[in-house]
Amino acid sequence: MKNYYKLVLLLGVFYFAALMLFAAVTVLKSGETGQEAEIIKLNDITKDAQMCWDHLQDLGKNDYGVSFVILDSGDTVLYASGANAEKGRHGITTAIKRRYPYTYVIRDERILGSVILIDDGGRAAKIRLLLLTGTFGLLILAGAFLFGGYVRKRIVIPFRNLRDFAGDIAEGKLDQPLSMDRDNLFGAFSESFDIMREELARSKRREIELQKKERELVASLSHDLKTPITGIKLTTELLKAKLESGQELSGNASDLAEKLDNIYKKADQIDVLVNDLFSSTLEDLGQFKVSCTDEKASILQEIVKKYDDRNLAASESVPEVLIRMDGRRMSQVIGNIISNSYKYAGTRIDITYRIVEDFLEMHLADHGPGVPPEELSLITNKFYRGKQWADSKESGNGLGLYIAAMLMEKMDGQLLVMNTDDGFGITLLIPLS
Image (cartoon, rainbow, N blue to C red):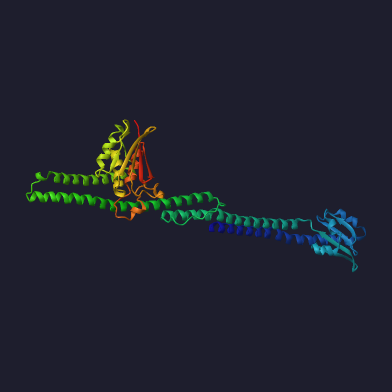
């Protein structure tokens, strides 16, 4: 905009310089020449009027090329010539005010009257034209400055703000809102850009929160993996020590079976943790897939039995129907639910079944403390752990129910969570074949 104002000012200077030059060449110069010609003509008219004062009508025989009027000593018009002669009928006083050239007619040292030349309007018209041209130039110059101010306020400043805002966004400065003015041309864009800033800020906060939770997940998984691994190492070291000491293991078959079962359970815990982490990673990458087949509903009892190593599950009979599911993924779902119940409730788990429209409804309910109502909608979110358990010594990574809900959705089913009269319940809607 500085260059714009400089250009306008420069054009204004050139315009008025040219106007002054034109005035000097036309009006002033022609004025000087015109004054000399008027004096000559005034002298000629006065001389002729002096000679034929008693019969002034004879002056009409000559063409003086100007308008004039002849008055007597009492300002009475004696003779008038030319289209503009009427302008001089008011006498010497008016002529002086209007700056008309005049002179007295003197004969025998006596003033007979006066001759007044009337301006035909040529010089005055040129002066008026110059004044109008100058005024027009001033208006154009003022308009150009006002237009520049409008453009600066409505376009340049908002555009500069958008440019600076884009620079701040590029530098990651997302906390400073963009000032919005709906009156400028960029009002709607300003609002859209600020909405974009808010979305980017939220995305950045979500990314930071996700990174924090991922770090916490790594720490939690490290702790969770360390526990079963330690148990496996201790059990194998004990068996190895017995072998090295020459103790017979055959006589302690039940003890050996218990140790091997312990190793199996610890390894299974590791498998669950690794499966959850792997499933979560595949879901983030958009590469998680399930392969559903038709299965007998009785397979659900087998899955429960596999993961109910504490014998806390009390299951009623399953309807004899075919369900469509991925057996491996359904094992992961039920395993995560039972594991959560062991960890946070530790009570009997009642399992019931019923057919609801096109689904087999499998309901698992424990008799623990339940979940605060305000957290029910959150416990299936990724990395979420209830407030009462987040600061406890209970291990957890907030993936169990998230993975279970995600897997049910992948299998065209659904996982519902709820508080029951005396605990917490989860309902699985499994599609019928």
